[in-house]
Structure formats: C-alpha cells, structure tokens
Image (cartoon, rainbow, N blue to C red; front, side, top):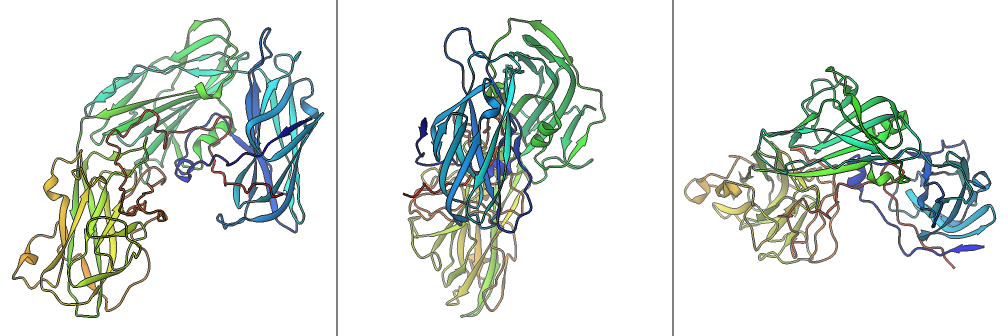
Length: 582
C-alpha cells in the first residue's frame, strides 16, 4: 500500500495566461455533465498520456497525470461545496501496461491498493481545481503500442460527479521542434525566413501534423496558406483587442519515427512598423480535431487563400525514446529598433463650492510601436495624477491607488493628494486610455491645476525609455480657468476634459479589470488577455509605495509570465484547494 501525502499548496496558473489562449501539448478532456437534482461536479484531466517504452536497462521514464474537478458555482471566491469528498481510480485497465505512483507534490490524501487508488479530500472550490497528481510509467514487460484506460469516479453527500476516463499508451510519436537561428536585433521592415523543422523521436509515425504559429503584435507572417487558418474574420485586423495572432496549419501525411522534416518553402517572419519587444512561438503536434479545437481556444479563424504549405523529409536518424511533450515548441524573442510616443492628456473643469465634477484624464500612444512586456508581465508605465488645489477626489478608477504627496502608501483611498495608476503589461499603438475621477470642489481657486504625468513606474527613473518626446509626457488638469493665468495654457490633449455634474456620478471607472493589491508597498501587474485596447484603461493596482519595475529588460529569459505551457492539456486555471481537515 502506498500513501500519498497532502501538498501544502497547489500551483495556480494566472488567469491572464488562460485568457491569452496559450499553447499546450494536447487537449484537456472532461466528461459531459449528467442530469441530477443536486450539484454536478465534472471530473477531468488529459484525454491521453503517452509513456516511454520500458527500457532494456535502467528505470523507466515517468509521465505526469493530473486530475481535476470542476464546480460550476459562479462565485469563484467561495469554498463552493464543503464536506468530505472521495475520489476513486480504477487501475484495472492499465494492468500490465503502466504503473501509477504518487507524485512528490500530489495533493489529496490517497491510498493505492492493488488496482485501486482512493483519495480523500475536504470540499470542492468553485471553478476548476486540482484533485491529485500522479506519475505514470510503462510496466515491465509492456509492449510498444499497448494501451489501457484509468476510470475516475467521485462521491460526496448531495453531489453528483460525472465520471472520467483517460487513455494510457506505451510509445507513440514524439515531435521535437528545432530551434531556428533567427536574428533577434531588428529594424522595422526586416524580413527573415523561417524554415520550420522538426524530428519525430518517438516510436510510431504521426498521422498528420498541426503547425501552430503564435506571434505578438509587432510581428507579421505575410503568407496566407490554403491549408492554414488565421485569427479574425476575413478582412479584419487579427490583433484587434489582443497582443497575439495565431496561424494553425494542418499538413496531412505519415511522419515516420527517426525522420526529420522541414518546410518545402520557408515562410516569412516580418518586423512591422509597430514592432518593439516581440515573440514568435512555433509548435508542432500530431494533427487531430481535438488538438485544433484546443489551439483555437474558442477564437474565430479564417482559412487562407494562397498556396498550400507543405513539408519534405530531410534526414533519417536512429529512433529515440523521448516522448516529451515539452519539446514540441520553440520560442524566439525579438527587439526591434523603434519608439513609441506616449502623450499625457489633461483637461479643464469648472464648478462651484460643493459641486462634483468628473475629470477624464489619461494618455494615448501615438506610436509607431506598441509596447508589450509580455515576458515579465510587468506594467508598461504609470499614470501619475496630482489633485488640483481646492478639490478632493470622491471617486476614482479601481485600478488607481491614492498615495501621499511624495508617493508613499496611504490607507484612505479617497481625498488623497495624489493617485498612481499602472497600465497593462501591453499598450497598443493607437491606444487612448481614459481614467475618470470625480472631484468635489471644496474651494474655488482660480486656475488651480494638477499634473497628469505618464511615466516609468520607477520614481527614481521616471523617463519612459522608449519615448522620443518626453516633453509631452506631462499635461495638466485645470479647475476654474479664468483665462488670466497659467490655466489658459495647453492641458496636453483636451480642451475640455471634464464637466460639472453637481454630484458624484456612478458607473465605470476607466474600464479597469483588476483588483487592488491590499499589501502596502507592493504592486500587482495586470494579467489581462495579453493585449490592451484604447478603451480598456489600466488593469493593475498599485499602492504607490514600492512601484513595480517596467521591465527595462522586458523579455527576460526566465520571465515566462505570459509564455507558458501545460504538458498534456490545454492551459487552465485551477483554484487553491483547502487542505483535508482532520
């Protein structure tokens, strides 16, 4: 009997990753819900797991199996279901094929006896949560191509669990993508060939392949192959609302073990006029409808009308037992010599004592480049707003934090003398971000003005490193301009950015989508969907104390904030489970 110990905490993937629709090694399978009177929880995991054949010498290599449970409760912050929960794995189907053992950091309390594993837990959080993690390895004496299934069921008082089964196979194709020697320091307009090349290091042929190309906003793949499909509707710009575009190319044929294949004609990768920090991801999988659906991630795709993309065999080599879904993909980061002009936008407003006016301040990116710190996930910049004399803020965008006059942490968020609002980790070319503040006039001070500044998030290094025109990074919000003083000067992008309302207004606060960081002196950067539109405003909270770095080395090799994969399944967010109660 083997006993699995509870893990201290689950790994939780950021929601922005899942929203970005990032690539994965295979499709995640979940069973269809059954009809029931009470709550129905759905068990799931990878549809299939391939195992390295049992070696002639040494120990067999292990593959991971992670099981999940989905609670459809819409309140993702709630515990969801509370009570004893039991999960049972029937291992009869993999007898003689594979052996299941506990992962070092597995999750639930489990006991494995013979061909049955029983796991106990307490409660099921709302949303998708991990049940337990296991290691799978080929059984001694198993044959290449042998397969079986693991059946998973669950039980708890007043709850129905839809059962789940996952297929386990010994051997299979192992498609390994070759890293291409791209030039990484570019200028707008540079075009490079991309002779995509991969090897099947597995034990069986791949029946057709799916080439996935994902590239950030500053890059372009000009070709539109007839056996590829692309993001967006026909005639639409594929990056609308996103930082990424995707091409999916299905190439039929049998791709033999030990053989290497390359494109018959290299495709092109171009740095556009908006390129700055960018990434290209290129991935190869065995083709299937499930794999195509997984990579589409619900987005609309349009088929190309050009010639067909084809592959050719270039070499054959000794067969390798390297069934590893993590080597299906390669990534390259590019740095293009370019600039982006960020322009602060202020305004004017008038009001009598006791009245409340709404001031729409913000900034815009006049380009030509988009700025995306997609590796580090850090905000691109911060909007720094100093409140004019004779007024106090009664309502602010949720993403903005009130700070002291010198930028320190402040508990009371209303009536602060200064506010700091971080941007998303991406700011598109052409973005026009508006942040409405409600200001109560406490005293009429003619020509009272407050600074509106778009700057680096480091106060010690406020200049934006990519901006060639720092002079327009600052604008002013002027209250009660009588035309006789400094209030008659330019306010930086709007002549009437605020109007009197006679009272505080309700509704949206700048389109913010992120919560506030409750910890003084820290910041939380946006996880977002990977791209910011002009109307999205900012999407990360900042306490104003220790302001976050903009990522002056934005494409950090170990950053992985956005470029992340899940082996064996589509990337998904899991909720932290409560440890089993005694």
